[in-house]
Amino acid sequence: MLRAVCSGRILAVAALGLLISVPLAPAQNFTEIKPSPQQVQWQDLEFGVIIHFGPNTFMDREWGDGTASPQGFNPTQFDPDQWMRAVQAAGAKYVVLVAKHHDGFCLWPTEQTDYGVKSSPWENGRGDVVRRVSDAARKFGLKFGVYLSPWDRHEPRYSNSTEYDKYYLAELSELAQHYGDLVEFWLDGAGSAGHVYNFPRIIEELRTYQPNTLVFADTGLFEYGDIRWVGNEDGNVPYENWNVIDRHGFLRWRPVEADTPLHKGHWFWHPDDEASLRTTEELVSIYEQTIGHGSQLMLGLAPDRRGLLPEADVKQLQEFGVAIRQRYANNLVASGHIRTAGATEAALDGDPDTFWSAPPGSHHAVLEVGFYKPITFDRALTMEWLNGGQHVEHFRIEVWNGKAWSAVVDGRAIGHKRIDRFTRVTASRIRLNILASSAEAHIREFQVFDGGKSAAP
Image (cartoon, rainbow, N blue to C red):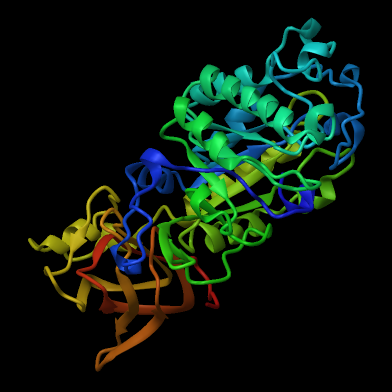
């Protein structure tokens, strides 16, 4: 899928039309750019998975060269419902299936080539992995999307740009027309071998049938994406996250998606690979360094040769989901603060569908919370309402020590969601001190939690 599998930068395609939130005009400021409604909804999903399954699964490979016989693809217990139960238990909200990887093997019965499931012994060549997975995702209340690699190491027409573009667009059309609404669309540009992809035609084809799909792209493909890559596959956003990017003087709202596999360094399943499975502690850290840094988390999953997620993976996903729910279940603000009749309650109620607004036209504001008795906590969760743009530019989280306010967090961007960890502290008054904002700040949630032990920032 990504560089660990693809050895290349991600090039995914395009979102024009409905998903461009503003015209590409040079006379704009970062804080004037607003997300589209589709981007707002997508950012609220927060956590997705991407699933790799194909001939590589049966050959102990990460890379396929397009020569594997379709006869080798024959899962014996294929059960995408089992996948979705594990995905749901982990807390993910959407699923992206790799419908065709770089080896060119198609997981749906495409009319464009025989190289795929229809030439395999699985279900006597009448099976459709994309259909089964998309149906299972929706059955469990999960959004569904697809990955369609433009690089194709099997298809002979790849060497002829004009003919291959027709072939690829026909495959895209099948996926875009026959598998329901797609929440996200991926294209990966690894190994292009000199082929120049016709992005405008790909965009037109996609948008004809899927006007609301968000498209993942490397930041460099400025005009061809709605979502941008984080820049690594480690499950880490190593910077304060601003949703607007500048390319050649043009600004666009491009939220981040951070991708990493459940098994370190492996996107496809491999035998005897339990040692690479990430621990619960590692997964929680990844959650806090991605979703907690205003990004989406895209976790890579890999069914085995049976067509099932391995038992160890299922157990780890369940434990991960439980750990996150336990860590962020007891919001001390919502459960114990002194309630007032003021508008600030909208940011303190534990409901992200409500938000508090600072006074109109203000560039500084304070959201203060008092408690009936002192509370002890070591982390804070803050959410900014982004429909009108990202405005907070400098803030502090401060505690009252009986004589003065003392900062435990000093940050710049808040964005969709920010989780800050700090040394455990006890206080009866805390506040979110917005020191600078480009316009009045809008805060969806201000929460604090106690992890039960000291936590370094």
